[in-house]
Length: 115
Length: 112
Image 1: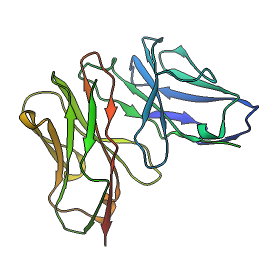
Image 2: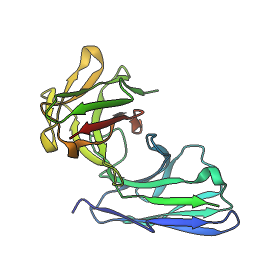
Image 3: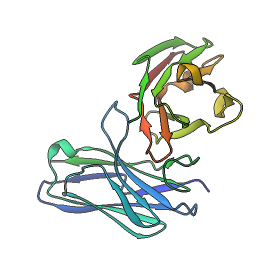
Image 4: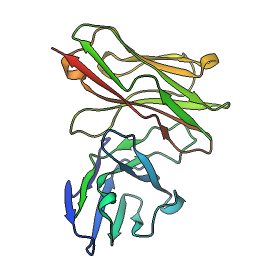
C-alpha cells in the first residue's frame, strides 16, 4: 500500500475560522511533509516532520500550525488565514528524511479556498 | 543551495510523437533525481527515480530518463506519447542533508 490519504478534499473557510487538514499514511514512513501548491506552480515545502518531531519549518507564517500526533498522522491547523493562502495543500511521506535515497509519496491534496 | 530548471514551460505534441523534457540542476555533490507527473485533477505520482548505478532509468508508463552527470541533467523521454500523457511534469532533486527541490514544471499537451 503506497497510499497517502488526506481529508477533506475541499475546504472553504472564512478569514476568522479555525480548521484542520488531516493526512494519514500506513507505509511505516518516518518522515512526513506539508507542501503548498499554487495553480500551475511546483509544490513549495512548508514543514518536515522526522520521527514525529518538527525538523524543518520553511519560514511559514504562524497562522499555519503543524502537528504530528503519531507516526502515521499529520495535521495542519489553520487559523486567521488570508485569501492568498488559497491553494492546494499536499501531504507527503517518505521512508526517512530528505537526503537519503528515499522517494516521497504524495496524497491527493486538500483544495483550500479562503474567503 | 540546490536549484532545478526545466527547459520548457509548455510542450504541445501530436499523438505518437516522441517526447523529451529537459531538466537541469545546480548542485556539485551527490544527488537523487526524480520525475513526478500530475495528471489533471490528480495527485503527484512518481514516474521514475535515480539514486545510483545505471544512468538510464526506466519508469512507469513507458517513460525513461537519462542522468548525465557532466551536464547536470536528467532529461525525461518517451518514444511515443499518447493523449493520456497530457499532464504537468515536475523534475525534482534532493541531496544529502537537503530537502526536495522541484523544478517549475512543464505542461505537456498531447493532441489526439
